[in-house]
Length: 474
Image (cartoon, rainbow, N blue to C red):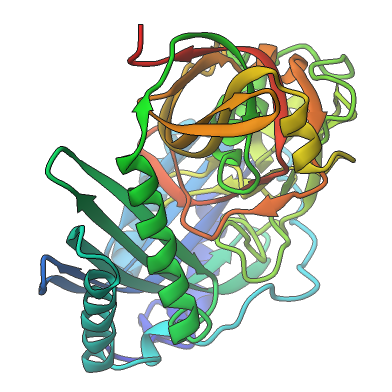
């Protein structure tokens, strides 16, 4: 693919000074706002059922112009980077500027360092090399076990350049790489078929992920999961003490708790956590952070999509609610500071408070000690999809790998286990927290109001008392 422009405004023909002038005129009288310019290259390959099923290459660019006044925002976007398109957008966003405060918000502080390379991952392995790797992954998986019936392997990469320009002339530029590798397979016998999967990625090149030892370990893990599920028995239904594994099971925390700690839901009082700042909302020992500053992580950003440097934001500390994730608009309206959580899917989307890498910190228990404490329960080692109601906090999550726990020992694998509960209530039922916090492998995407953004999750092993389990063995 072609090289990306070094300066989006100059190479578009619009020019920096002209863009500054139009942006300043458009936002004159607004409380806040910005011109967000984006250039993106992306590539994806999918190898399925022994053949290359899809190969996509895409280049896109455009801008979004936002004017913020109080709790209202005018937003216009275009895939055309030109003076005429920007002036049309300026006319469109001006409709919100009546009743403004008369004071334009101060620019964010500059970021101190970049959290990832500026090199494009699309300049790494050639197309031919990527196809050969996917073929090798397919062949390796099928040779590992005769029960493997289907293999799907994929590689994806993107390179995003953003330029953020404010009415006061403040300008922020960020270059964001992203890669992902994943494999899923189906194993079966004469009676049934089950699946397993593995994926990894981050804001870096492909090099670390496509070494033979790494991708082979990934295939082995996907196969292990599928073979475990082949032996699984129907999950029981009822109320059980549940042990969650470390790492990816933090997706339950992300969905059931994280969204409820985003600033917009709390400002509008539609979150189950609204009005509880400073109060106990979780068991002692529970500390949850959102950290966008972890180098090379999928959910990390040097600056968010408003130009604010990301931060390590403590949300719950030792069970007490101490913070929310904020963009600029909601932070100002709530009398708080932005935390660098203003994110958007692309130039065609308005920013809003979103998570980056949401993590529960480690406690002091060994995982074995947590298992030994459970007389009759469930061990949820990995999750698939789930649903959450932000206002009530109610959630339902399906387990892709789960086991029965009896007398402190891991028993038979379970099929069809679903965890059902209420996020704020589940926080108070955490009774043991492991010392084995792990981050996920770098595959998460979070959806909110139709926008998807890359995120990370993490947590240690933990025990939650008396959680409802929906199963198939009733």
